[in-house]
Figure 1 (cartoon, rainbow, N blue to C red):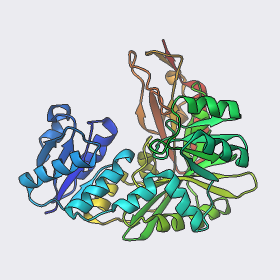
Figure 2: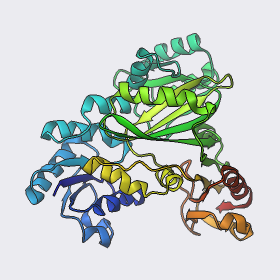
Figure 3: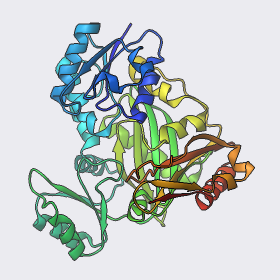
Figure 4: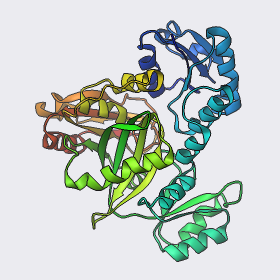
Amino acid sequence: MPNVAFAVPFAMENTLRFVRAALSLDGVRLGIVSQDPLERFPEDIRTRIAGFAQVADGMAAAGVADGVKRLAGQLGRVDRLIGILEPLQVALAEVREQLRIRGMDAKEATNFRDKATMKDVLRASGLPCARHQLCRSLTEALAFAHGTGFPLVVKPPAGAGARSTARVDTEAELRSFLQTALPSASNPVLLEEFVVGDEFSFDTVTLNGRHLLHSISCYRPTPLHVLENPWIQWTVMLPRRIDGPDFAAIHAAGPQALDVLGMVTGVSHMEWFRRKDGSIAISEVAARPPGAQFTSLIGHAHGIDMYRAWARLVVEEAFDVPQRTHAAGCAYLRGQGKGHVVAVEGLDRLPESVRTIVVESKVPAVGQPASGTYEGEGFLLVRHPDTQVVEEALRTIVATVQVRLG
């Protein structure tokens, strides 16, 4: 009976879905390390876990290590240490090394987490990615900008989910952006060429170095464009067929990228661009399950519980490869304006053809504060064997449903 420590810094809804999946595994004793008190966790989780350790800092390696040691006192030796948050992956790897727990090590985790290191590794292996430079001064940043040309993308080297990322079109904009936090040796900034093209994800399940499942998602429009235009209700669509020539380049480059970065066992989330000339550029790769309902969408496209599949993968090192039987998509319901949700309009006008293929939803509640993220205040997930049906449903949803803020 394996003893598993799940690092849950905060009892957030999305993380708890993964916790419940791990709790559903037979013969697993699950303990939680958290910065939140036990009372913050729902009753169905509190009553099923085998141990709990509250720590002062659930995002730091020292805090996680302290919690794992205390769980070992409750459960016995900890066999697995898992967690889904992007900023937590290096800390988890460091604790695994310190306590000799099987799983991804710190070097591999850093390859995925540090975006400058990641691109250096990819480029050294001849894999396509945007030109980039980790800049430790304004002088370095300006030199890269003059050599590469505008527009550029500015981001933190350990960012996630397009947060703190911006496009700059001129030297004046770059100077203005960097004045808020001047780059330094201890606080560098990553500059990249702005790749023009369509953006996708390439999500993969890997077990003992074998890439068993790939899933491709189409972003409409790109997340950076969404961040720059808060009025946009964007969509993500997973086509049923992903084996055609349009995706041949990423099917070739994606697994190679995972190999050189060091993915052995886990679910990974890769973002990539296809330029108008057909060439591709890998943007970022994360060594954790994707957020923003992508994990749900992958499950719906393959007819499986992807949360439980992830838990089996990282705890039991087992994965049953499914067939992709459906297209799936998500329409993100983003509020218009600022403040709190005052109304959700248009749901009653959705045609029956759309309502019947909705498989998951989160309808924004009146009074709910604006999320301030590109995911918006709610979502509708749709699923159908025909990709065109899913595409049309997503277009209908974003054209019909509106969330008013005020």
